[in-house]
Length: 321
Image 1 (cartoon, rainbow, N blue to C red):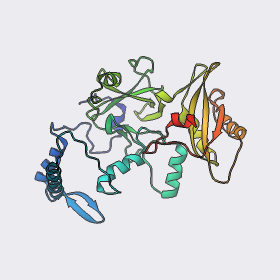
Image 2: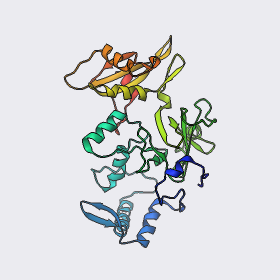
Image 3: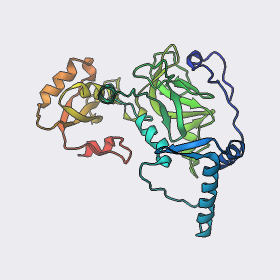
Image 4: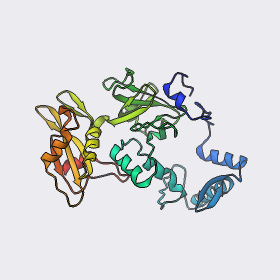
């Protein structure tokens, strides 16, 4: 997909990185076979100092495919892969480090870099557009952003209400994406597919901002936004403030229905061991750093915050505690 040359992020692509590449219309495993035929001795992976060439990788996977067929595996069967940290796990491992569509609180990012000395570069991707759509040029990282769209990927911010109006830089709206990595649809779910694939764009369900230079910042999930007296409050912003408190280990902010104001922000907090601040102390801490309408209205101290298997907070479960 050729994009217009006026996209603001193009000028930040590292040298020798093209704006566009051609995608062969072959199945994925054929790419491996083609590469093995052209570069059989080139290293595909390495583990503990032992290299594995493309030729070896192709041969090993051919043998595995034959074994699976011999034991009855058929086309469209599902095969579960359950492995320890290994070569096959590398891609998934780094995908988690880069946090995906989950906004990472700045305090956690800074603490990680302080403890490890390793720079955390945020990117963005989602199941419907795997493995990623945005990343940061290594020599020009903007703190708090997920970077710029990768090659052959277009992105824009549209209004929340209709999804049709393209918003200006720095305006908050829904992030929509177009590119070769976008799915063709949900399996046997035309209604759900129609809801997220519209006019050639994938509607991510994430609220974001694009700045003047084409860098994108994820604000929060659209479905998690809190509506208070007509104001829009992003839980992630409140969570970032709570993580600044020295006694907060983990937190999650959700909206609770209120007949008078619509919704109010409610915080669920896991404290660090040996500390017990009061609800009032937490509320006052937030008041110093947030606009009055954004302040946390209730605080609940809990032993743990429910998470999915990949570590994402399940806010509906937190609210039921």
